[in-house]
Length: 309
Ligand code: SF4
Image 1 (spheres, rainbow, N blue to C red):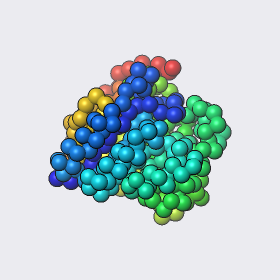
Image 2 (image 1 turned 60 degrees about the horizontal axis):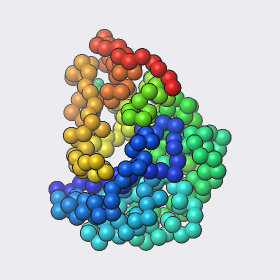
Image 3 (image 1 turned 45 degrees about the horizontal axis):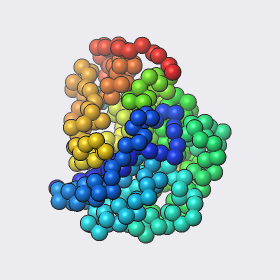
């Protein structure tokens, strides 16, 4: 059966974003080259036909090109590389990656603002490289998706970010809702209520549609997106096998996809396709917003203290 092999090569990165879920202890963990190549072979044997290579930051791996070439030789028809794009600004890195067989680029921009980017990624002197890498990715003509993070201090910038990206020739954007997991678990201040963020998300989606861009929203339930529900996207809906330095597992069976249905979900027209609400979000805010949009009473309030780091 076709599907996606989602390979986390390792957790090391040349940035340290202020909402990153990867803590210092994880940074040193990585797949060996031999483990990565064996996982490629196993994935193809299982019929997987698409490959996603991510991290951490995969472009800092010296064996990235060899792994991409191996994926191509084994017959993966679609090979995506998820990156912060910084390395694409230098030399012929991007050209060599595409020549090796990468067919799709995802670039995490985080925020488009020159006055906020380096504070968010916690590394000075990187904004120009991000913009340069993004411009090269656009110029390459390879299919490209830009990732933006929706968090308390970026949400108001989303509409302007879409305009900025459109001006740079980007045609597709994914909006990722920040999560309070792992190393970001106590950063409660980063997580806005969805009803606070939704006006900005809605405006961003509208501006994207006006420019014939493809925009997807991750982790905001369809009931809250309202008329924008066609933008909802759940990566776990397809067959995805995840390979990490620790384990190999089906995404649908993992805690990454393990979201929660609440009483107000009963009878919802999206009940069969919606994966539910993230547990970290329910713990922070309860289900009052979902209940309200469904015309039901809330069934649970927040279960954690709002401790900001
Ligand atoms: S199933 Fe629940 S969380 Fe999902 S869209 Fe419906 S009411 Fe919202």
